[in-house]
Image 1: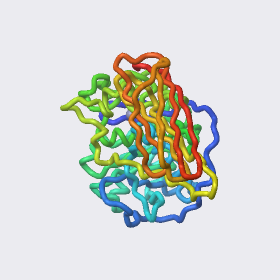
Image 2: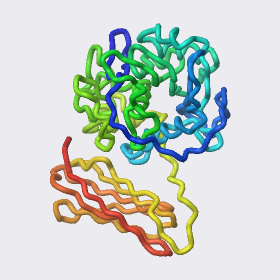
Image 3: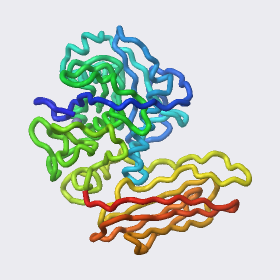
Image 4: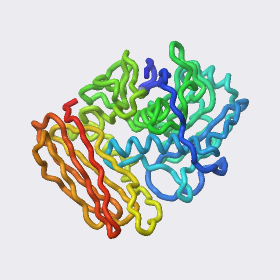
Length: 375
Ligand SMILES: [Zn+2]
């Protein structure tokens, strides 16, 4: 991840990746060359698949690859935020991905150097992608000699466009295409798009305690596991389970300081819809998902949610900190048992717990163990 003079926002450089397989099973989708009617109103992210005039059409919009990559970073975000995601533009319930072929050739666009994103923005804006209530997330299937992506340094000026350059070849870094698109758990390209979108929302501001200055403005300096990190060490997207949205929660998300912008207050961030459960099978209770807070941090709330394929009647939440029981807040919401525990400020050691949910057909439970760390 690197930035340069003249752009406030960063340009993401490629990282070596650890091979992993992309998910499968996403249904084929119809191609559309427009932004179709929105399912919901309000600020939202509209996704585009863009190729240069002479570029190969790999059909990433119709194959489900783009839907998968968006689902993957949204799922990560949802876990980090305890249930919130960026509101996505959908059409009849599925991600609304528009296809666009540029008038410019791959070479024309790449010749813009650090301004590839600006070239995309100019053409898309002229084509009518101008909604003030939308951020545009562009998967550009073309090259760049500069980076693997870029964000909008001045989103209020003309549209709000973030982009990944899927065939970029940044100097001194692996080709962007060495990273698979559509990985779950998320890989480099999933984190990179979310990173660019968070930039385009105006983060990280200079008032953040770990904000970098000068050429790396917009980033934090405290950990290479942070979504918005930049620095000389590699960005640790190769360890997706350890990546975090604002390490320490003190710079840009839920930091609780007044007078400094907080991503938690962004109108683009909304409660994710409940995970749709599969139809109930008579006589069987199945676990649909079990999620917990990513980190157990002293002085913060740790959450665990168990979702079944049946309506939950009763939930039981238990947790111990170094063997001593902690008081739980317990709730039932449709097919989910939700538990939370406020960790004492002085908490250290290991948090162990269990969430049990009882339905009319039986019960299910899952347990967890997390090291309490101050990070
Ligand atoms: Zn950046």
